[in-house]
Length: 314
Ligand code: BDR
Ligand code: CA
Image 1 (cartoon, rainbow, N blue to C red):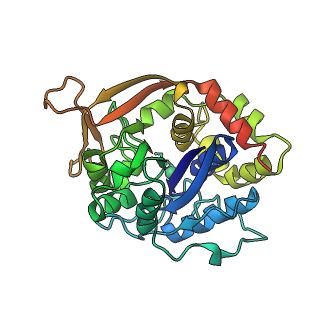
Image 2: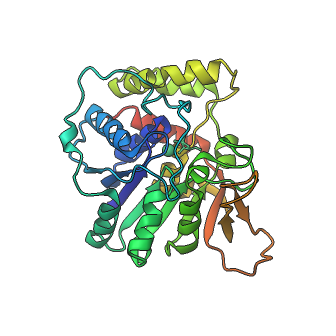
């Protein structure tokens, strides 16, 4: 089986992405580490347990990590795209046992998992890169023990979602993103914001997926209700936007990557307007070797089918 470790700030798109991995028959998720982003890491761990309970997978270990990013940035209090609790602010009538959250720190868990399965783990990062950067500084050989790493974050045409020029995960912890792209030491594939915008779903697809008569589709639809009303409907979004789903899809099924470029890039950590933006050296002016593969086109129908499989999980 393909072994996956998921680092997440779940988050509703993270939740769908995790379900996609759980639904893939050739994949085994051996651990989930949580990172502060959409909400703080403790709350993310609770969200992940809630999700795992919904699909009877509470045996997967979940690890909490640091509250703060590398330089201590904290999300503005009014940020509620995924709800103030990261899961749509929908009360849970039958919560999981939160004692199931592992006592080991997520950063240590990442190191230990890489030693337990050397060369076997595909790491999928769906939130700010705080944990990965801390791992690298604690154990610089970490990346050598990974098979590969797929990251949702950054941009390659300067388009942002949290600022005009930066994507949320990289903006939230740009120093961490910079460290990971410079020093991880295993093949890195980036799913950037522009890829997500160019592969959003028509609303008919959204309906097909989340109006399914399954418990998990109903669960996800219920969590997403507030985001759909408060953001998509109020602002008349033409399409349904995905993000983390694309990173898991590419990680578990690389054949669906239609176009990609190997390039050298760095993350701007201190721009007046550009903090968190990815600077891509398309013309190799810096004469550096490529450090990432940026996906520029991906098979949308395959992604839809992977979500469809996820919405049939029991
Ligand atoms: C990213 O930011 C978060 O809100 C999403 O979960 C995704 O990881 C998109 O920019
Ligand atoms: Ca996320």
